Image (cartoon, rainbow, N blue to C red; front, side):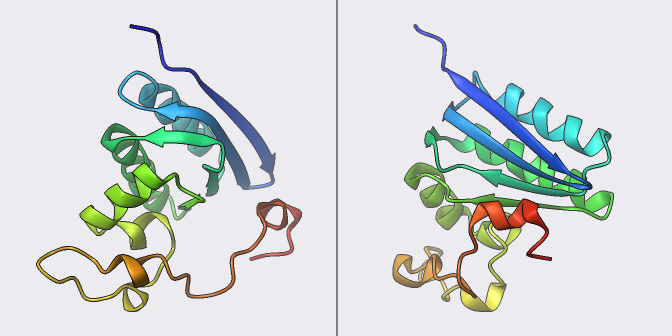
Length: 142
């Protein structure tokens, strides 16, 4: 079985980092993501923006890594936010109800689940306009 290819790019600006992941996040590649995010926190980064635009697949092992990193960031007064998750991760976020932890969507913006399943028509509605990732590191956004 071929190994999953994943590339991690990191761009720091003061105590903020933009982490761009390219490829697939699964059981084989999740440790690489975990290491990259933990290293950011060790280096004093407190705001982690993870760009998933070039990620073609992410399973529950990726979700576990993101939840762990978000918890570690919160413990040191920081935040972790996912940007542009692939459909597979979007579905997992919907099913687990963890959008508010990783996407920055306030709980009030999520629809009430029916039988434990969020309404997909409203679950991804952002509370405010989406900001370009370049603005995140330029200091234009706080």
